[in-house]
Length: 393
Image: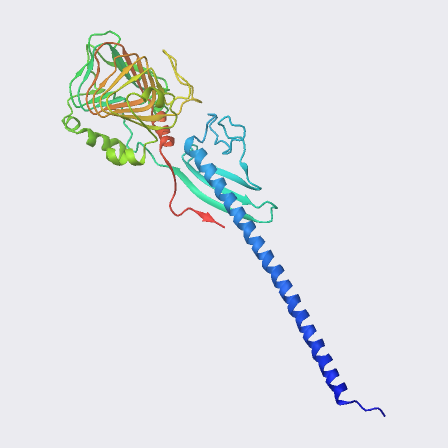
């Protein structure tokens, strides 16, 4: 019988240990490969999730920018798609590419057709659609005119008409509210007009702007009950107090937080003309000559802005103002000083002056009170996210 030598035993042990070590190394290598593969998958998934989240954020930013400018550019009373792919200024899709990723955006009007409060949801997708992230937020316009005037013309000082003026309020029975004297002048065309009690739809027609017929209440001979003059409480207000009464904050705070267009008297004809859904601040005494404000197309003569083009705006003159060149305004005109409307001027909405209102060199001033236009000013306020509504998941 052959016997194993000591050297043979050592060789067997060495071989066994080598096999065990080889198996261990193999298992460790397999485990390491598996761990690396799993780590790569986790990293790739995280990267795709981040890409999807960034796409969702880009979609939300795009929706915010579009809605802040005008949610209904084409004027069809339906919120536009918020992505403009053909460069015509009107959104045409709710899907956008962000590099190799994409976002799909949905917008729901929470303001019952007023298009001032929106639920916006942006869903971002990675390049291979394996990851999706959703961001949701409620966006709302801050009201730039929280205390709406109840009559077409309000002035701290007097009203002196040298040319002609017509002030219409088909929604009520007040036209001019003044802290000073009201002089209707001597022009036969000058009058104030209120809702006609003889209208077949009266008084219900007063609830729908521009539907009631009107009847003359005051003229060069008679001051009717629609005209309030020498109101001492109104006449005692400073310009800042008058401003705060309507806009809900002092002029300095309002200018810093609410104004979308700041301009000078030299540039107002360019900066304010055809302004749409804007809050405009003019710093200094200004002549508002020949401009159309609050309509997307120029209005001339006795024409009016179409409903689709009407985009009411706030224009504030921090100084005295004069009108020339037949301007047209849709919204509210607020003058911190006095206003001289010595031109054929038309205002749809309301006009307020912290001084007096005159038309010293003639011309025709035509003011139409319209609560729909004043309510539409809400779209001119800055868009902001409602606190506590941001969700991402």
